[in-house]
Length: 361
Image (cartoon, rainbow, N blue to C red; front, side, top):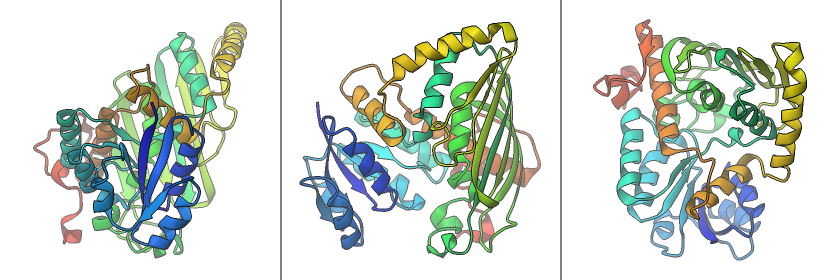
């Protein structure tokens, strides 16, 4: 079954459009919505028969639209997603899916009540190297997680923060932890399991902004794995790296910042005599994933599979809630100086709103 999509926001929405266009038998992009109608029209021109509007209400009122894909500034994600669910539409939502834990919980409850899909956008999961690592883990060749090191070392300066909503607590809802490292944190939880404890140090050292642009974070996961995450927006270039060490295998990425699974990873058996088994499994996995789309197209394929009742490797609404809960825990740990346990106690103020009091409107 083909599904009709409306893309809200013509910025990152362009990458979403290309993902849908790679799957023309599964999706038709019917509408692009942006408050700057000319931008919407330019993006809509990439899809045959696609219209452009400047108002969200027109999208919500259109019964022909099955899926609303939210690519708006972060402070709008939660409210617009709730509107879409109330209008009876499935939702695909860029990160962060919400501006607080309470809002994320509300989204999950609304999707469950309506019987609709809410799919957080974590397209990094859908890369060839990540497919390979998942295949190795499924075959029992990784062993138990031990430690992981993550680097999100990007370059963001005055030009990036010239966009009015960026770098501000009320509109961006957070800094490098929320807007940049959230992807790499999702990837490590994909293979090490949900985070159960966090300690963190955060600072604003690079840009004249309200939100944090540097972080040093330590995490424990429910598999027993320990994770360190180094984050800065003061790098000379944009570079991301993952090194996941299991007791039978070490997996290491290269430094692609936006598609870490697109380049070849190294998969090294701890016991050299097991390397042949790892290499043979990789050959099998490569045959299995040949032709499988990656990035946004890979994610959208799984959304289609789910909506059509097929087995799907889906990023779930629960994954989205956990991603927001981890952000809140990182902020709470940095401000309290404590080791913070997850799941978070929902009575904590940080779950209602993590915007610092002196930045609240």
